[in-house]
Image (cartoon, rainbow, N blue to C red; front, top):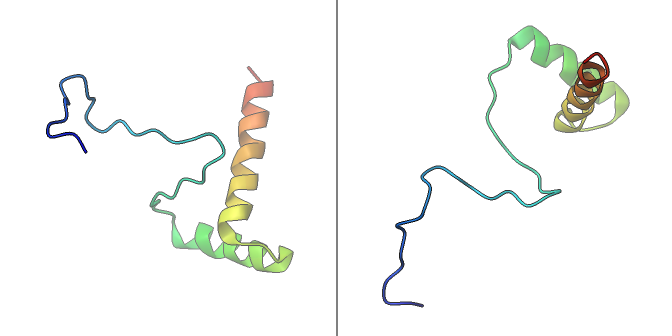
Length: 67
């Protein structure tokens, strides 16, 4: 490893997320929303995060189509 590392061109808070990588971030969700989607995920036999990703992706597609 180098004796010294030059951070003069660094950007605070900037992180590289490789394409296709899963990103885990905390989110505050109202209990009723969490309960609804938890129940739906269980009915479909999928993880809650998988269902929420699917729902959000569909919402993005709808919003993009309406532009």
